[in-house]
Image (tube, rainbow, N blue to C red):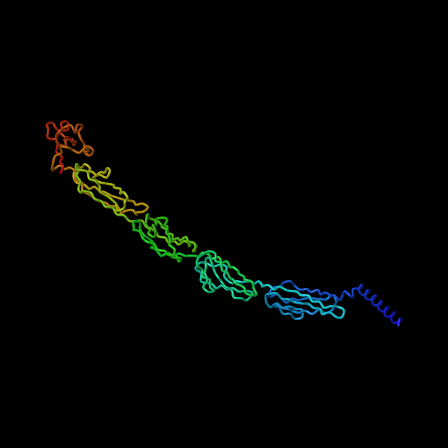
Length: 421
């Protein structure tokens, strides 16, 4: 009996030694096994599959389980199906030496971002036709379009309202899986070009013609301005002729906020010189010793005329006088106007008038001879010293001693009297 007791004690002692040895070697500690569970703290909806990793330090297989949340677990591959918290456990149930252990991990699944794309023009011009604009989301969610600035939307067509910047915004409000997103497309709306239609005008006119009207229209509907250079002036659309020569009329439209300046349009007209006519009136006949006569000569233009005389008359300052002679003769008056830059030369006008001189036979003796008498007739030295009438002496010279005694003394006596007809 004692031997049995001693053998049990020996076995117990050996067992204690083994336990102590195993404890020293970590075998007993392994009963409190641990799990290393690797999982991301967060994920985004739409991410590719997540692979979870878990292992027990005991080397025993670990079981993995989805506890809750918008995920699907197949093996160790996790598929994200929505937004929220996905909870997973990794469990090792243990064995005869090791106790069970469970580790819990959570993955926060957040909404995904989405991108917006816009398809539309980058540059247009005022008065362009409506252009289509489309937009889409990478999440394939419906996108809302809006416009501001120089344009507006009519459905999915962009309507240009004026020149300037136009901003088209594509917006998506998001949902339970996607964040909201927006994108702007800035379109430069340029000024529209415009052209001028300038109506035809006469090819020529004449100096002195009255004003005429020109007409031009811009396809923008903006008012057209006129300017003239050369031989005419512009007052609005009324063109006045100011000289002979070439006249150029320019039509312009400088544009505004929506329209570019139009290319200039021009029309030309040649202004011809005007004709002129001379009017001449002279009293007819004129008499030697009679009243002086004014030449009444004018042109239909405002230009001054020039007069010349020939024959039995003289002219001073436009006044003609008969020359001294005996009998009847002709005075020829010629009036001219050579023209200038605006008028053609006038056709000369010639008028012949009768000039009546002195007579030997009739009718009145001359008591007061013209002052220029001796310029045409030979006179004695004391011609003007007598108070008689004019008579010719025997030597051919004239004296005013007619009717008085001793007339023409020293000149061979009286020959005959001379008369004013």
